[in-house]
Amino acid sequence: MTTINNTFGVLFYLKVQKISAQGKMPICARVTVNGKRTEISVKRSVTASEWDVKKGMPRGSRKEIVELNMFLNQFKAKIISIYQQMLLSDDIIDGPAIRDKMLGTGKLTPTLLKLLEHHNNQQGHKLAPGTMKNYYTTQRYIKKFLMEKYYRTDIVLSV
Image 1 (tube, one colour):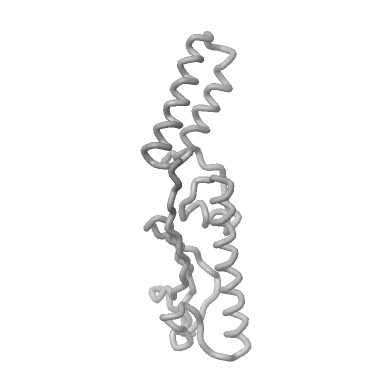
Image 2 (cartoon, rainbow, N blue to C red; image 1 turned 180 degrees about the vertical axis):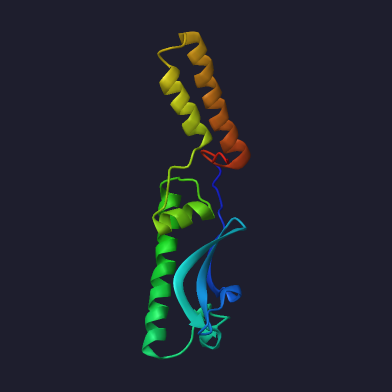
């Protein structure tokens, strides 16, 4: 059996295009999965002079900065935890799915095999057994194709 290798990374950066009147810039988290970037707003801001670009964290020893660093570490840990849960439960892993789970706006994403399964469940009693046999065979071939070609158990349908 072939294993799937997902590349995954999380980093924080300042969104310099959205500078406020106080000179603060919002902090964003960039989640990269298999080379595709997704942005998550952290809902916190900091001035550019307090930001360490190399570390991707605020620098300083003021109480607010220390608390912000702790918050960012927890934020990153939660993203990593969501990624690991998705990996263990064999979910489809992509940046938008991680962002949706992180923000609590996760909705069930339609996938090809879920669609086929739904069709077979709904039409199973309406169609002839020979016809249903063909649908089940098609479903089995699609599963096999996805695993051999894309090393995935299912694929998201895009709108």
